Image (cartoon, rainbow, N blue to C red; front, side, top):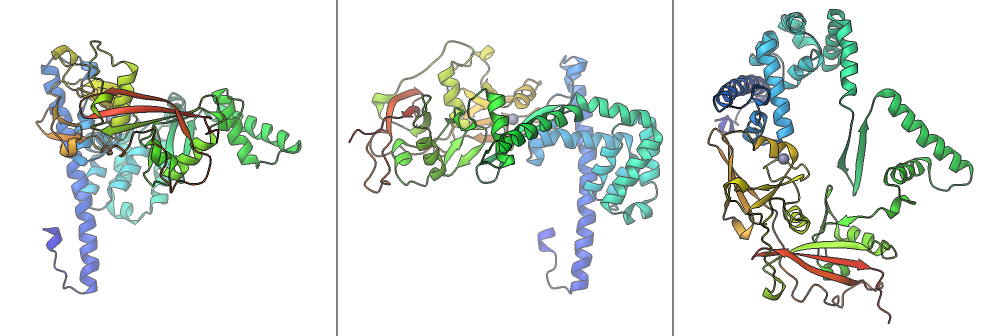
Length: 451
Ligand SMILES: [Zn+2]
């Protein structure tokens, strides 16, 4: 319907269309919030009937909201929390969103700034902030937040202080990709500890720089941080598992196929080659893993474990195959090897019956009404169908495998290889496998050709 909106209109009409569509988006967000809350209530009733203890009820509801919105379970949980605040505790804000007077983002700001208030104070906050729509719509984001903070503090200064104390329980360390094969390692710390940690790094860097250190202050701080956390003598010596996804030959030659580093994602082939070459003098060497399609029969070993827990080789295989949590749109790092057909129902501990899941998704799956099963996938890709308690089904395909190189993994590089000293794999393990895939682990080290 929207796609067919009349294109033959004048600019005044176009501006009106943009305004109307904005109001429609806000109204849709308000309706989504209402539907999410109703789903939560209904699912909790169903879980109670199924005997789920009160403390665990509500499990998996945020995950269902996420799947419906095609977002990560974490984001789905946030949306559900926002919906509950709006629908159950902030009727004026919810009404302003429904009428299109404020956007979903503005509503989020009001929910966020009133999060520390008691239910009664939040009702007052809601009425004062969103009761008068004309005043509300005239405010910019920054003024809205400033006014909201002032009001929250006036209503309950003690709660604002208590909120700071609660925030300390949320201290954590996270890592996320940054551009150009860098990462952000972020620590959320109580202010005194954060300041102390930063001061220790700057002090150390200033001392070294005064002794003639040529690296910049920032570089010394970053290197010191890594050295102290890992216990390594030098930052660049940290062992790295290039959980790649790259052949021996393509590691040696100028091949453009990207590699994959666990916990980071794809990296350019040239970067991976430089990294491997740079590590050749290390005792640790560099492990390169690669999944092949249908390798030669001689390399195959069926690994069928009788144990409930996947043995290390099998777990590495599943992690290399899946790369990130298999829940659609999740992308979180894999923490568990989950049995697709549960172990209790006779599911085997095989690559075929295992999927990599993050902690939250593994948890959601334990709620009543969730089911998963293996399906035939496109291009022989490992495919899992997950059914939620409402009967909705979502398919998850493992990333595509690559075709094996024409020769064995240890074949000499083609003549187009760069003239640098050739790498030579010193150990090759054709490892764990099912009938269509194999994981080959190759250890490269300082095994330069003598010639
Ligand atoms: Zn997940």
